[in-house]
Length: 327
Length: 132
Image (spheres, rainbow over the protein chains, first blue to last red):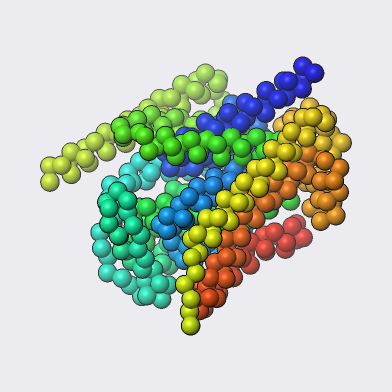
């Protein structure tokens, strides 16, 4: 009986970890899975294969859960989403097959290292984005007409209808292929790359970008999930607990996000994420015995690196804001 | 004449229904697992051991008869399995809905693109597992 209680406690602790990942993922805009994988591997001792499997499943749950709210508001551009899904689903197939190869050869450490790098690199555009709600107008190109990239939505905060035209569809399509590969390889939604593709390449408004990316993440993750399933990367006990937790967490995160008025609080979350990123990177090198250090030193290095990284990004951001005000 | 279909509303409704159905099955599966103390013949302490690399999705028979018999025997694993696959199919169903919309809107380019996406999804689901 006591062992049953212990197992129930284990289940609950994963649900709580999932809630934490979901809240942090939605507050930073990186998605719950990006937080869940480091959490499960670093603190719960879960093998990275199962951690990525559970996180891919959680990704679908959060994407579908929040997309149901966004699509209703008619901000999501389903045409743009479906068009770009050609590249992300192809990428997801390539990525998950690569993951299978990597795990078959027991190169787990590579996944840790790539995960750490992707997490750290996703932070930079995520930190810097959101300066303009509506992008500056760019002249429509041939792809705008051919792929019908014009759209509009009602912005509740600006209190007006926003018309927009997407450009450079082919460029977004190639970025999306990489987003798909990363998603399949690491079991995350890779929303940061998807946002980069639509925001930077296609020049779509931020609201359209984030909601459409969220809609696409579910389809990309569904592609990878089936390959993960047949390869046995889904541990049912873990996936069940994680999916429930992350789903709950991301709903809570969305509610908290509305209430946060002080933008600087976000920097604490970015700090936690960069800490996790450096830890994953080090863990990869330690797993393969490329470097040999004690776990205390590992944590210390991660802390220092995270503080330096977020501190310099913060300083850069403050300078940028001052500069903008000066103009 | 092309017709305008409220795709956003239908998509939103489908997504919500999918997630709710899935979570219901997953929670039922977890409850069954704890009440019975086992699933598919494995004890709950084996099931909750992540270091064991044999007890995972590879064990589950995804044939319709396999799923049905798992559900009839109130096997927690099969309830979770159904929940997870409903979840996987939820975003896919939105692609299917978009195909219907593009037919109604007489938009051949996007019809083809949506079909390619659907093809990729089923390629990952049905063809790749057979090749591996």
